[in-house]
Structure formats: C-alpha cells, structure tokens
Image (cartoon, rainbow, N blue to C red):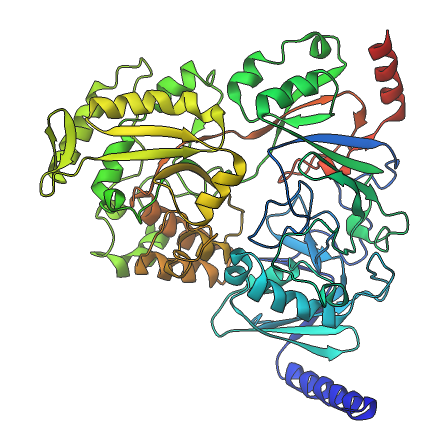
Length: 609
C-alpha cells in the first residue's frame, strides 16, 4: 500500500472511531480509579510520599538467592535476573497511597466511556527507547500481541478479555474489550509492559537471553556475570525524569544485586557490609540474628515499617490433581495436624497472626456468618457449595499452644474414617483400594523445614507418611510449572481491588496451563461464576460482597492449610539512607529513598576506625 492510501485509511479509522465515541459519554482524564475519583488532580507535581528534591546519586546493593540465566522477565523459560523488569515501563503506574488508581507514564492522557467497554491512550510525544527512537502505537500493539501469544501464561489470562488493539491516531491506541462488565480492564491494560517492536524483530522472544533487551525505563543493564551479579545504572538522559509520577523516584545512580547460595549466607554478608538492604521474612532471625554491634551502635538500622496492604493468603497448598487430595474431607482432616499456636509461640516468637481469609488484612475478607449482601450473592449456589458456607464462620483448627494436639488429631481421625481411610498395619489406607495415604511436601527454602517437621510428626501419629523435600530454585520452579508436586507452600497475593488475576488463581480455564498460578488445580463452576461476578462488580459495595462470597467458597473448599501474616515490613539496612517523611500506606516506598551523603561518609568513617 502506498503512503497516501495508508494515511487516508488511518484518517478514516480515526473519524469513524471519533463518531462512535461521541455516541456515548467519553471522558478524557489524566488518571483512572477503580471506583471513585483519583486522589491527585491533573496538575499534581508529585505523590505525597515522594520528595521531589531528593538528591540523586550513590548505589544501593541487594542480595538475591539462587541464580539467573535470562534478562527477559516476560517468558516462562529461564530464571530471570533480579530486577530484570527495571528497564521496562507501562502506560500507567499506580500510586502507593490509593486502593487502585493509576496515573499516566508513557500515556499522557486516557479516554474512556462510562461503561468502560474500551479505553484509548495518547502516548507522550517525548517517550523514547534507550536507543533514542520514539515509543509508538505500533510498539503498544506489538506488546499486547506478543505477551498474549509468546509471553508467560500469566499474560494470556490477564489480558484474555482484551479483544482488539488498534491505532486510531498518530499517538493514540484504542483497546476494545470482550462483552461483559469489567470496570478493571482499562487499568489492567494500563499495566501492560511496553516492548520495542523494532528490537524484537529477528529475535526469538520465547527463548532465554543474556543480551540485555532494549527498554525505555529509568534504568538499564550496566554489567553482569550470569548467575552471580547484575548491576543496573540510571539512564542519564531518561525521557521520563520530569513526568510527575517519577518525581522523587529513581534516586540511585546504580542498583546492584549479588547472588548467594541461601538466605543464611546472605544474612552474614549483610552483617559484613557486602550489601545494604534486606527485608527479613524469617521470624526467628528477626528475633535473634540482629542483636549485633552494628545495630546497637546505629551503623545498621533494624525497624518495622507498618503498612495497610492486604496480606492475601499463604498456606500449605494441596495439588488437587493428585488422587489423594481430590476429597475435600481429606484436605480438611490434614489441617488438624498443623498446630499454629504452638508454632507461633515456639518458632515464631509470637510475631504472626493466623490467616483466616484469602483476602486477609482488608475489608474484602469474609468473617462471621454471611450478611445480607453476601447471601444475595451466595443463595443461587445453595446445594452446589459446602453447607458450611451458609451455616458456619470459617476458622482453621486451633489449640492452646501447649503442644498437646490430641483433641485435634482425634477430630482428624474421625473425618478420615468417615471419608473411607482406615488404619491397617499402622498405616492410613483407602478402605476400598488399600492404597496408603502418603505425600511429599516440596520446598525451595530450608527455612520452612523447621515448621513442617512437627506437622509431619503429627501426620505420622495419624498413620500418614509425609516427607519433606527441599530443592534448588531452578528445580522447584520447573516442577511447579509442570504441577509436579503433592503439596507446597505458596503465597496468593491480593490487592484492594481484586479482578482478572482471580481467574489465574482459581479458574477452571487456568488449571491445566503450564506455568499458571492455579497451582491448586481448582475446577469448580461455582468458583468460575463468582470470579466473573467479582470482575463485573459495578461499585465498591458490590465488590466487597462478591469478594467475600468467593472467599467463603474457597475457604470451605479446604484447598490449603492457612499459614500466617504480619502487618509490617521488617527491614534491616546500613545507615546510609534518608527517606521522605510520609510512607505510602500500600507500599514500602523504597524507590523514593536516597543515599544521604553525610550518613554515608559517617558510616564509612566508623567502618574504617
């Protein structure tokens, strides 16, 4: 096609699109909120939790565990380097002090109709790739198509409801959605990582690569040794440095990740000053390992930073693809062998709260008996979900913390016998087949072994043979991608605005996709329908009621043994940083910290004395 007909065709598409858009109320905005209006107006200069005058410079160093063999974080193959997403950007970015609101980054404006059946983004004219070429509408369309067809399975599920992407202006791209109400879709598209079409032509997107892919973000790969270390350096002429969402962010000149064999070795490296910042997830280490001179004399800071982030669900997950876990009663019985109260007191120094919801630490969590709004959602499913959904408040088995769990084990025996599992020769076996009840707990961190050993001993008292197997990160990921496990510890993170990602977690369609996040293997039409209702919620009130209904059905499915959560970040870092006076409610905000030259100099003097 010649240039002139192509231009005429593009103009015709733009005219037709504009005519269609005028038929419905369309808003042009700088930001989108899931419900309500954005906190920050169109003329905002920076987020409240960022210091626009923060000095630039210095380096921050982190520890990573395991290894890496690719710099492309968007595919299933390979293990991506820590921070591999740093060179890439999205159309919009979320704020850290709102439930779910996104503001323009690559996109300077957003057009959306009242029903949110489509969304259009106008790209910033100044947006550039690191090679200096402009970010184009063609790049955006290429990104969607590539991630949906060649990217990690997550993207296929996450963007499944995006029907088309088309160019409707020189810098304008329009996404049209499949039928059905889903107010979240414009924000989901705003999270789309944008990839350079011209770079990937002639390259295999699906294969691991150690060639740093072209990006557009504030950092780019500087140097690395595969599997050992990688450093990202701030782009001196970064196109987006003056965009309001970036004010007070990206303050380090360099970000370095060094790899260690395991967390224990990494902790000792922190104490020796080999890296700067660690977020501690081990309660025993937090209670005992930081009573050191560096903390006592102030050279290292140990603190808990409170947050209001939904803590989701962490638990010992059962792979329901395995015959032994297909019966809900078996899964329920196994939970009585885990003594959280004793574990929390003895192993965790009473630092944790038991999780009783897939949406814990938020108003989305189900509690007590279902209220009127929840009952309206659940009533059509009566008889298709466990009766307890309507009649009982969910609570995992509990003890007095003394270590005496006989009563719980007796309950487990009763449930197992009712389900057709009896004792023969000291083993718990299926009455009909004689097959023993046994399974493997797959772990990728030795830290969980001390938690699982008492559980395994209690199972042994029930006649159940459970074994613990800890493998390296690469083997663990490969086995999880293929669902080659019996039980494992998994975390299902949640936001204040659940939506499309729930399909990836729990839907029948995602259960058999390799590398997906429905690792439990849930295939329940009721769950599928409840997910659709959550996604289609027209307002906050209905979202809460529908999410709580989904929560109840998942809880009473006994798909996992709930673990625990904490409402703060536990961090330890060398005293060389300063940070804004305001901390975001829903994030740590580390990207707004900076190297304080005076503190760094004082720290250097103290370390040489």
